[in-house]
Image 1 (cartoon, helix red, strand yellow):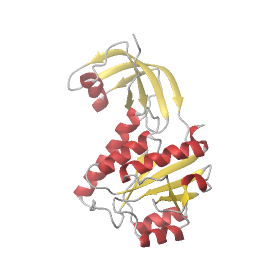
Image 2 (tube, rainbow, N blue to C red; image 1 turned 90 degrees about the vertical axis):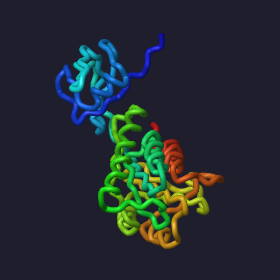
Image 3 (cartoon, one colour; image 1 turned 120 degrees about the horizontal axis):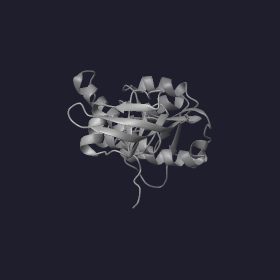
Image 4 (tube, rainbow, N blue to C red; image 1 turned 30 degrees about the horizontal axis):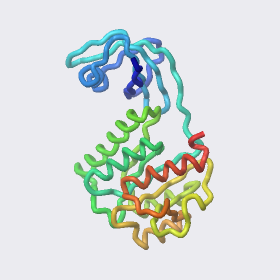
Length: 250
């Protein structure tokens, strides 16, 4: 019988002892959805690099479901030397959430929502915008668990073009994905450590004014290949290329 990969559950902090009680929403999911049983293994993660591999000693179902666990091993997932933030323009429908999901699975260290001029989606500063941001953050958490990541990428508050340009000017590197760019991603120098921002435009593209602001901030326009990618997939493709071109996958 093939042994399945232990599922990952997120906790606020990893308890220091050898025995742990998992409760709350994660425990209810483990009991009611995954039907976790005594003797099975699972992994706890604090989302900040701390990981604990555990075995289930007891299962308590019900509204206050909880699992009693024994910690077998602990480890810490180090931060990469090159921290990559995907700047994702707001996208219509569920394409923004898909972009966050794919970027998280591809290894993004952070995701920053951007209020681009041509974004069809508009997040206000009220309840509607807060709800949309919460969906992006929930998507990142779920995707990190699915990818068995010890670190959940931070999804920041949405920024304007002016705010974004200021961040790019202070970074160790900044790339703007642009289908008509002169240079391929493989042709430009990349930092091997520090902070790198990768800007993904909306469905309608990045405006000339936005490109000018980013160039002034030191960003470089690059293309990923001969095809035009959707806003929901471009960030993940760029992360794959960066994994091979830098030390992120070593």
